[in-house]
Length: 174
Image (tube, rainbow, N blue to C red; front, top):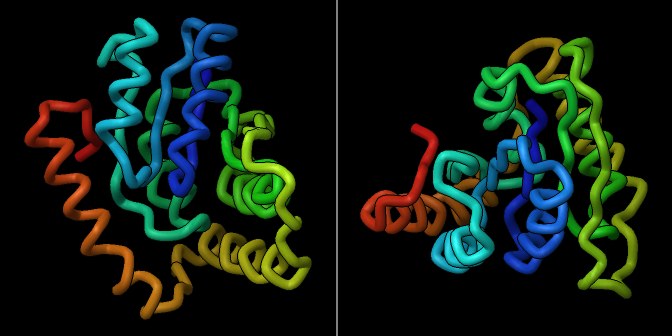
């Protein structure tokens, strides 16, 4: 089994997820902290994707935690490949993080950019290095370095989205 991981932040990325879901009909879909669960679930279900094929996860508040907070769930499926879906401008940093988080786990990481948000300037080398370092620190020590103000700002909205998704009966992790 393979996994398609959609990183939250741009609900339009689900269109790339749908393309991959058709291409890899046995792949499980994990949506990490997307801010519009009704939209995502509506598109998945409307495209004929059954609830047992996807799961929503609301534990992440930034790109590093999109990976560190879903790794246990994803590894539980024992996938061979992980298809990472995010915007093209965001892909270099996302793959740097995924490489650290999935190092020596036997999972091949595949970049699957959503191109609809282009043109957008690429993320800075400094940001890529910073999050790569945070990811390796987490992978080697288990300690997650994060900016508290960002977590504090984003968690209330994420928790509200999770509550709404659970109340609606969507497949939610945890």
